[in-house]
Structure formats: structure tokens, C-alpha cells
Amino acid sequence: MRNIFTLLLITIITTIVYSQDVNDNVRFIPQSEVPKAVVDHQEELFPTNFVSEWQVQELDGMQDAGNIRYIAKFEEDARPGFSASYLPNGILVFNSEFMPSEIIPSEVRLKVDSEYKDYTIQSADFITFYNPKREIYMVKILKEISMQYVFYNTVGNKIPRESLPPEMLLLMK
Image (cartoon, rainbow, N blue to C red; front, side):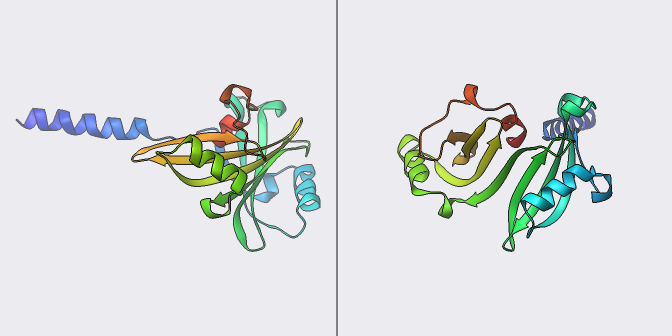
């Protein structure tokens, strides 16, 4: 009996440890470790916003410049939930804004409600990509215990997952 209990306990602990969604390629860094070009561009594009934290993300575990993104998490008008992602040379890749369900534009909210009748809209991120220029709503919907993301443009047209920019995968983690 004791061996069965021990085996069961080890199985539960192992399952919990391995089921956690941990992105080992993202770490918090002080502003002093962020390249000057990135900090300067953040201050130029968002001059009145307070950066609450900086992160560095190594895509696919690679450490060369093309696979590194610097992410600024910041507040706008005392409202948290904004971020901007930069290449090491300071080029802005995308910025995003968190939106509770109440402030998602009606064109998008009504479309999601009609296409996902059994789901509840929890929130969205409004993401602006810059090369090429695209604006996408990443809407988080819930049905009982399941959660998924659906994607829409600014006029409420659904965007298929396969046509999303590759950086969008980073935001879904």
C-alpha cells in the first residue's frame, strides 16, 4: 500500500511539473542591459509611458541578433497592459494593448459572439505589426474549462491561424 501511494504521489508531482507552461527563452532584465537603440526608440515612440519591466526573448533558444527580441511592458494613462517588441537594433516589430471584454470594439465583439455562441469573451490584445503593417485582435474566449484564441482584423473579419505573423505564436504563450 505504501509503495502504491508513493508511486501515485511521484506520478502526480511529475505531471504537475511537466505540465507547467514555462518559456525558458524569456527572462527579465534591467534597463541597463537593453541596447541603447531599443531604449531610445521606446522613449521616442511612447514618450509619456512608464516602462514597468524589460524582458529579453531568445526565439528558438538561438542567441544571434535576428532571434532576439527586447520587450518593454508599460503603462499608458496609468493603465497597464501595453507592450512593445524590438529587434536589437531598435526596430519596432509590434506593440500590443490589453483590452478587457467591455472595451473590445463592437465590430469585433459582435462577430465573435455570433461565431462562438457557446463561448464567453474574456479579453483581447490589440496588436499592431509593422512589417508588413497589420492590426489584429487576438481574442481570448472561454467555454467551461477550455480556452482558445481567435483572431480578427479591425473590421471584424476572422483571420485564419495559418496566415498570422510568426511573432503571434510568441504572444499566445
